[in-house]
Length: 607
Image (cartoon, rainbow, N blue to C red; front, side, top):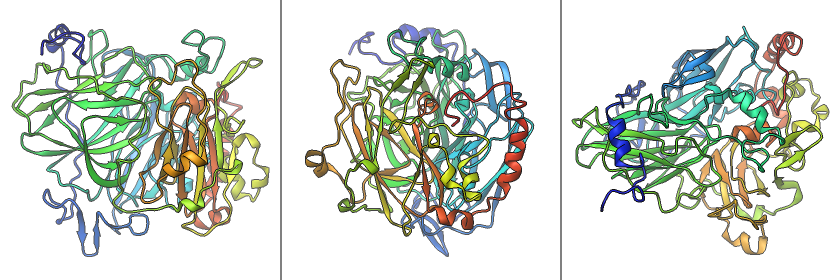
């Protein structure tokens, strides 16, 4: 087939390939490689982890955890750098970085290790916190890192140590949970080594894909929140396209003037484990690797029966562990990203990285550009992923009622003026000085303000299922994330090919027609999933992890505008499960700084 602009996907045309080939530099290979020390976990038997006692891919990790006696210790210093030159060679107005790098350092541990991370806040005028996205924090809700929910933020000049047990294994990530701060760079990968549902030879480590803005994300959020000055005329609340998309912090600029592609080395004839992380503020992606397939072995931190796909949708906050078989001719191959309508955009329309076989030229770019995936809608493959460790939610327990239905839609208050994403009419706004756990500690949960959007779950025995229906009366899909749990995905309305088309209306859940489509027997399970535009999503999770757990959209602008609720779970068990006394000193330190000594006051949800 002739090479034309119409049938090429990335990087658009042969002309682009030739222009950029001499400028693209080899990027550093992944720096992590904490090799599993368990002798039974080999390239021919990745399902095994330990033999005495026996821990393997079939072990129920929510009920049993290896006891390693090992503590992994990290120090994260959060700093800000004005006019920082990032991995695409462009200046960012204000970067906020962990240990001076983007992404931040990889947290690397084995299943069952304890992880201690001391966070030092060297920012000049911002609080901070670190949330470990995907880590359930079993019985350690006070280590969840959600400002205004589980802690007071860390003030400038302050520090705190997070400590938790790695009861799960797989791929997670960490990020600031202080307004939209993580979009300025406060994020990084987490990999917990454990068994796998399929064999592989080489663990490549994490590949973090992040949208990147050259301006301050905080300033962008202020404009996004103002309906009188939208980035897209006529669409209040619309954000700008990202200036770039970075792969482990690297990419070419859209104009080709600077930067370098990330190059990932594949060993011919070997199977490689790649840990995909979407650490973006706004953008979701459909990924393809020219000439190769992805064999998915985990969704978020849930091991699944292996399934092979030619393209893979990755929503904001989601992770996939995939295997890549290096069975093609020795050459360079494009890893391409496609944007779905309503799922983000960038001024770089063709973000890409290079997968390079050992022995292939390291100074040239791939020639085969690839084709657009036939279906790149903004949706998860809900029926394709079967968890190894089973969970089944009895569908007889699910009835859609006003009490378990969460409705969201875009609202504008012209008198302020502000854009909001309320849930059931209330945009969440936490109080940094009085987090939810502080109310729990003081026995004053009856005084929690309505703006905190706290939903207290009924007292129930561990293992009891709680069911929720979320309905989205808008043209925007939302990646929704639950702290402290995975959800089983009972069902969702199909994603629309064009959610922005005139005439679309809410497709409300209909028990008569939608009820028979629900799946309760070991359905897809994960911590982040897509709420379709103009549609519904039905999920359930099991009670048994005491704490205050956020459930929110992971598009930073939307959670900034109020898209979130808190589930207050097993309230009576919280004070006896974890030590809440450390809240006093931490909140006293924050109270000394904020608001009296802070140059900026809270102007959004706070999370």
